[in-house]
Length: 262
Image (tube, rainbow, N blue to C red; front, side, top):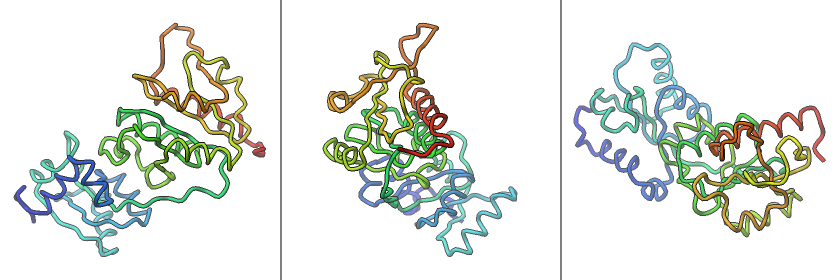
């Protein structure tokens, strides 16, 4: 059992938690908690290291046994050590370092989300979770968005990283994707011209969600073919970006249900 935070493996994980560049260079991200660890195991992605603390929880014991069966490198650590490397206030009893894999873009796209200039990791994670739930085919991230491997993004996404193609592309590449797949481009805009439930999401489309502070970038605005808004009878200025994304994505799900995509 590891009982010292000076252990090299513990120091390595602390560095990964704190430094986005280190995660990028090593091509890994960290998941915490039984549910996300189960998702990681089911995904088949390589797990470089797992830490766990002593437990009587049967679900966690089964998970540890399954990881051991897969020959996953595991270390039992004291609760104090696990707390020292955790990104949460209440450690989750298990932490995994997972090697990133890029899920390929589908050959045919008709339901794509672009998240532009979003700086809040909790919001990005929540949007990814909603996108996975809505069966979005790909999420594209142009320059300027928060690091998708941020511990808070991973935690808020609740396993979406293992289910969704999440791809960083520049705007020229995003434009090329839209042309290749003949995607109509919608922009979520509080000052848009078309109410979200009047927009036609039955066609192949790409939806751009901008950041809350500055909204969508000028490039995103120039690409948009139609700007959609969510009516707010309560006269609030705007909605949280993650809330807006969920409303729009599930309006698209409603419209497309039981219908062949054009």
